[in-house]
Image (cartoon, rainbow, N blue to C red; front, top):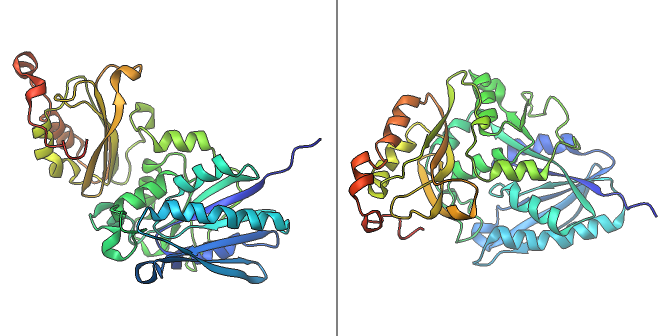
Length: 357
């Protein structure tokens, strides 16, 4: 008996629903149905509104209630039955899921791959604004400050969301490219952030210049690998148009207090950095390093003994107008010196990251 054919699904993400609309319109044809989720009513009423449409027009609409817990988790839980009901109708050969502006593609794709065998995630498309992209990647404004948080626990900033949407995308649609004086620089920046992505310019009306759905580009394993630990030399891209990615590596541990004191200097000029670091006062623990804009965060990744790697520090940082020598000097100054390696009681060092690790 022949296996049932999976229905391809395109994920559409991006911070601006206005810029996404012509891209969504370009995806709709006679065989496509779209589920569009908006978050305009979330701050005031605590609901995500959704609508279903195809090329002939609106089909259905409704709301998902979001409580005080994880809004993204509740969205996924509510979306899956809706998608299943649409697929059961058998009227369409392709689904577009337009996520709320503050939603990342990664948790949606993971849920679809893990729980909906009747669906095949086909393409992840992210729409970015050529006018605001560098600003969105460089600041420290919280989503909550813009009324875009997915519930009270959501403390992400705009830069973090923008970077993660780009890093998981098979295609980045560059809207408003005609309004930017250096569109090639933005192309380079997007490819530095995600070498997997294909950058497609939109025309002045916002319509992409080539197909951005049903491309077959999505590779779950590759997307997950890129979104995970960022610590390999083969991920570096050649510098160009002022965009530079720097690899910093050391086999010495970091002094926790000096690292904490240097955080602002480290992220200055860096739009995105990721990696794994070794803190002297936590000698057995692998620590995740991540920054977006002016915000940096650390998290636990398990023990060094659980990997094939010796303890080390590896950070990859991307910036526009970034000075590699300056960044490397700042990071080097955070390392234990040779004399400290020999004489310090590492475990007794003050721990400024005790509240987050």
